[in-house]
Length: 493
Image 1: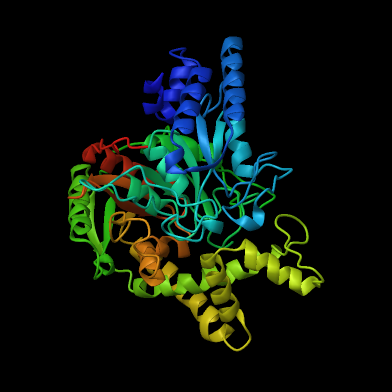
Image 2: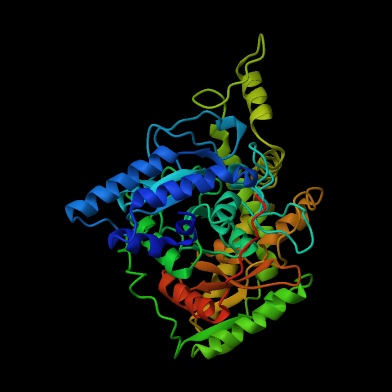
């Protein structure tokens, strides 16, 4: 049944519903694919029994003539940042190794309620901190893609690298991701799949291990715009347990999909033509403009003048919130406890955190603690929050002239694992096009556009107005239809 693993969310859901195949056949095919793809290191924990139980429930519903749900019969991968009842949840960190929640995150519960099953918990950068999926305690995730003529292991992007690798390798039809400063969009671009970060507050953060609470947002990663629309519908919705959750009805995004952009204006920010951006990325951006013109849109120039300050502001705000959020990992209540002989409480805190947190997490905690300290709070954190406001205002002014913005997702294609480890600043620059939309809390999506001269995928990004996921999805669909992206990684795993 290997051909079943080539199907996406919509095709699986509709096929199960009309009896073309059973949900159990689908789950078995994907469970086998996951087991055979250990070399990707995309999963930290596999849960074949969960996938089969959900499949059997879907098949039983169909037999009884009941509604299967919007995700009925679809097995998915769950980023290991979402708490899953009875299944280890680690955020890819040693400090949480062995932690098994007694509760289910709101987003994962919504997906199970919609008929989805879980193939397993996906690897990620530790505490979602990273752009290459090299900071996980459980080892690097490998991209299924390789440069033409090379066997060098490539980055699947981060932090949702396990999600992007699994979807691109056809070992999961879709996966959850989280996006704090590009962690859905950048890995989607690196691996030739789709991923959307919805408006901040669309998806509940309850039960999601926190990195930067004012930025974190869950979203779907799948192989098509249609599949992302379906999954986002299942994930989104108001949650009284999350104080930042939007009290708004979930639109019928799947039903509203349309690639006709007549009357729409697409903005092109002049500040995004940045030094160091790959020429092939810029070329694909020009091609993207033509595709959207062909779909009926008018292309207009817009200005986002504070763009150059967005990345430095992000790398003050996010670590500051991380240093506060990660203070809860102290070895007292759950997770790792390192208690040296004769140690007191402070010694236990220090030993546990030294052993439990990885280098990148420690780096960001130190940065965050520094910028929040009494002598530097106003000089750094307060200034960064002011920049954040200016970035949001830039978008407001731009959206007075256009309906959505087209930009590259990343400044380069994927890079070999290990090639940027000694240069954290260059690594951080991977998020230069993604961070502004995160700071402003806007919906933004990456859609695969083409492959470069090395045979690696390149993505285009659409940024929309607040709450206008439909506009983002529709522009993404217009690009998808015209790009006709059908490239797949050659199987080596």
